[in-house]
Image (tube, rainbow, N blue to C red):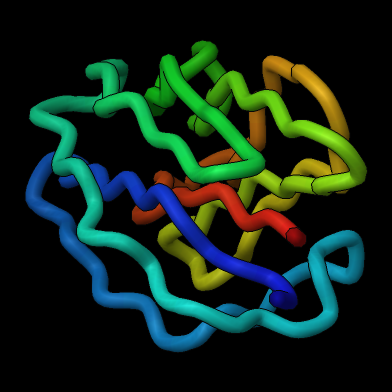
Length: 128
């Protein structure tokens, strides 16, 4: 079925809400993107928790944005079955993307934005 994008999280950071154009992923991300983002869960504040997300082959939860004192990051816990691979992706306020993956099985991941930037949107992508 190809690559599917599911589970989005959007964060409103202070007085900034950015609309991002199509992904310009880093080289470690999937080569082709298909499918659509689901309606994102809006987080009330940085560090707030998103709703659990799931799909047939990938299950994710405990998704949130946080600041480690130096830079912002997106954290999520996901597990996949079989040969399904998944990637965690965060879009940052400077137009860059952070990517963690591909992963199989269960992982807790943190995907960072560059210092001085903030997360705008994050999601998990997977292959079937």
